[in-house]
Amino acid sequence: MTLRVGPDLFDTVQLQADNVVNEDAEALRLDFKINQKHSAYFRFFRDKGFNSQPDGVTGRRVLVEQVPQNGVIALQSTIRPTLTNEFKFGYNSSLSRINGSAPPNAAVDLSNLSFNIAGSVAGFALPGQGSNAGVAVPGGLVRANSAQNGRAQPYTPYSLSAIDSVNWIKGTHTVKFGGELRFINVYTDRLGGITYTWSSIQNFLSNSLQSTQFLGDLSSPSPFFIPFAGRAGPCKADNTTLAMCRMNGR
Image (tube, rainbow, N blue to C red; front, side, top):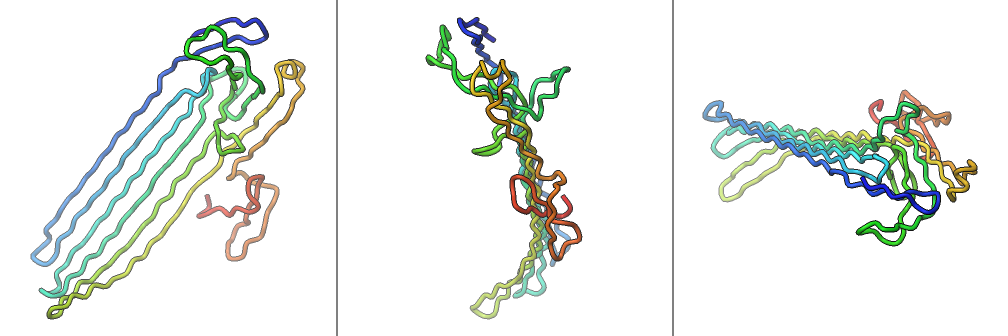
């Protein structure tokens, strides 16, 4: 870390931190010959990636975890020489987690806060930097979308599939038919926080706020309840959506 005292109310800090990337992948396949007419196999694949990258000079880091995985078990049967059947049961999922991590502070919990002072300062005598630099933004919030900040965005879709197909040979013709039953589930949430903004360092010192933005958690209880026919529980709304029904109780 490089610290230079500036001629105004700002000091200039340059931080060189490590970006940590880890990835582990596993794959397994087992084949079975049950008898002359039946065979089966099992296959599973999982890839876990983790990325921890610095986000500014305040010590905040962005933690990203991605875990795609899929598996299938299949049974292949020869009913007679001209008639075969294959049944498969498959699983697919892709866990995704993006979290902001603020340095620990005994005085105040910065995990759900962000302090933004607008403007820029002269970036003097810093090699590799332009003439101006932005003001550091302490807190644990990271960019959630183009308009809001949040502390985390979890997302986990998965699907379960049962597939059966029949292959029939009749003379010089081959007929193949079957069906598929698929269950799809998506869990997601938006974990927000509070962003305080001051238009200048003078307004910050005098505690003259320009704006305060509050983004609530999508999964948190809301004072707004909208009846939804066909479900036992209420449909919930918050400050990001008009109405959002929880899926499978999440």
